[in-house]
Length: 223
Image 1: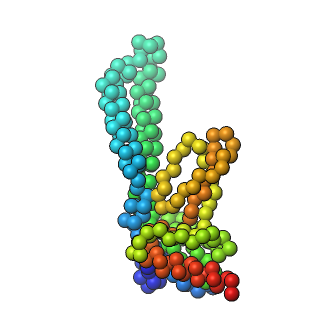
Image 2: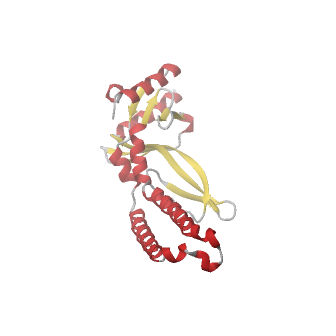
Image 3: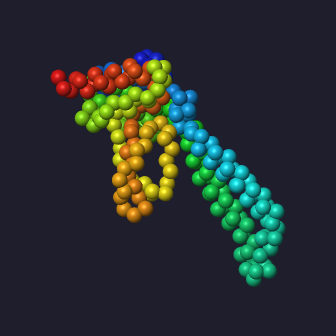
């Protein structure tokens, strides 16, 4: 758990500006822990996928390099000079495949890096998730938007979710649990399904205290 003075200068300034513009009172402020974010987003299936993906990618690349000279001289196929560019087209496609594979495998690392410029805050009006890179964005959740408040983890580090978001995805896609819980919903159009994603604060210190603050926010609207 952080107090406002515990934040770095950039984060503190952003929170203060938001409070000054809205006239709200800060009840709690915090930041996700990078190691906690990394751990929450890694899964065994992701590691297995990464090992298999790079094993297959290296095998394909070595096979291609072995026949690169043969493909370079495509004159035998009657393609003239155009044929000499075919190997480079293959390398481009191969590079895009590698990029997408890396994007999937390294997602937990990107999220851990993003935790450095992410701020969580609870005021007397709302809960906020603030990100200030690549540009500032503020996502607000008001008590009327809350569903069940759920705490996951021990008393030192955990997640506190308080609302959910419904998304439509291709039924053939797989989504890692990461920092939230996914529940599969009913079938939509052919080849698609809906999922409910629980949203909230990820990898926060002393999640029980955060849970109490959020409950107090809900109670304050009922009085």
